[in-house]
Amino acid sequence: MLASLAFALAAIALGLWTAPRWLVPWIASRSPRCLYAVPTHEKVVALTFDDGPDRTSSPEILRLLREHDARATFFFISGNVSGAEHIVADAVAQGNELGNHLTRDEPSIRLSPSAFVAAIREAGAVLSGFGPVLWLRPGSAWYNDAMLDAIEREGYRCVLGSVYPYDPYVPIVRLTSAYILANTRPGSVIVLHEGGARGARTVEVLGRVLPALHKRGYRMVTLSELATVGYTTYGDCP
Image (cartoon, rainbow, N blue to C red; front, side, top):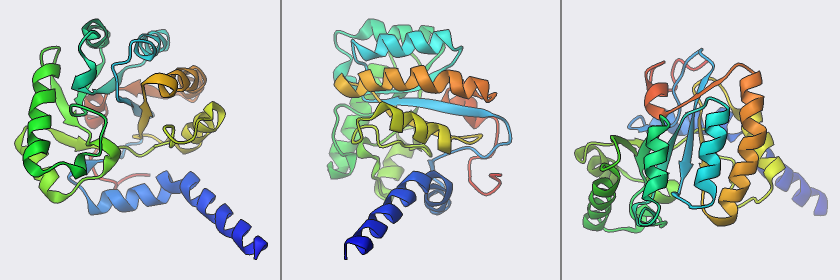
């Protein structure tokens, strides 16, 4: 019995580790209205950060992006912007992009349809004061067709990601870094998180991952930049 349990746990771990290579393309092919990755042969990936701005981690993330000539899309929560307006402005001035991550850190799918639309609009009103906001990532990644309809009506494109290293749940910098480096492919959308200990770990992860990806010949860009280099379905992905 113990051997069977160990085998099952190993299979689950292997499945999670390799999910970007088989599970994400399968999900993306059945949900083309939400972007997961951009098939391309160019060595270019999109870095994305959720749940900021954070007064401690955001400036450090911006510093590392500058040092490594990288750009990213920041999915800021509008409820976190008050008192951190200078961070949002700095992110935009540095050539990064803003994304709508609604008003607070909560599963968007639990909101009523009217509350979901209200949260989109409230966050959009705050963030659009700093620059264009074209992308929206629902909180906790779950969505349905009604939510996609609302996102599109409000003028956004839904995006999740193809490389999600479970960083809010697995607080191990080496594991997160190894997961990203093992699963990044041309056109990947990488998802990391800010805020408290998560943000501190993200800074450490970037210190490992950015130079390694540069060494492999990758460019790190915003989502809108990535979307211009290939098709937005998984069908032609190498």
